[in-house]
Image (cartoon, rainbow, N blue to C red):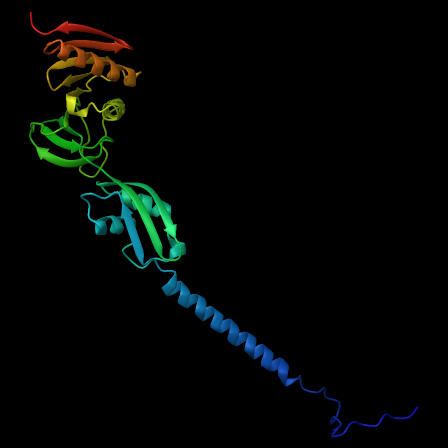
Length: 266
């Protein structure tokens, strides 16, 4: 067996050490590291600039300032698009006395749309010599010293012997039956368009509720069962009595779909 001829320019290894790795492998590793660094920088740059919330729209505002709503949502400071947390935003907005969070939409890559409802006063609550403006969920919106006379379409709520009323907090009362009755009554009165016709709600006894209309009809409603039917019946009967020229009187509407009318006076 003969030795193969050596290629031109061949230089034998000195000693028994292995040849150094090809230069292209070092170049490839260096390129990969540089690429990784550049990619990381690009991700950080995008994260810090492109994916920041730059635009916030708030739907449902009338009297509350846009800035106040955004501040309550926590979006008045730099916020990453992917870090926007709906639960935190809901908590922040509902923590105000003026707004209720409804829903949120994220619009990639830098927009958020918030849908809210403003709380509006619907009733005067009179308790322990003070008057409070409250909304239909019992949120205390304003304190007015003394027994203030109602104005506008606000209904006077009476019958609370004790209540914890603080501006910016939901009204609480012992047992909470009064508050449950209030929210249920207000829901039906508002949904049936009867607010402007009601002057007073008395909640002293949740099993014996009554309302007084602006023209002096007192309607006994019993407890909170079948309130939709009871309120609807009262509305219809009062309208008919007005057509007949009657003024004021007592209406027993504690039984479903039945009203007993007692005229006022002798």
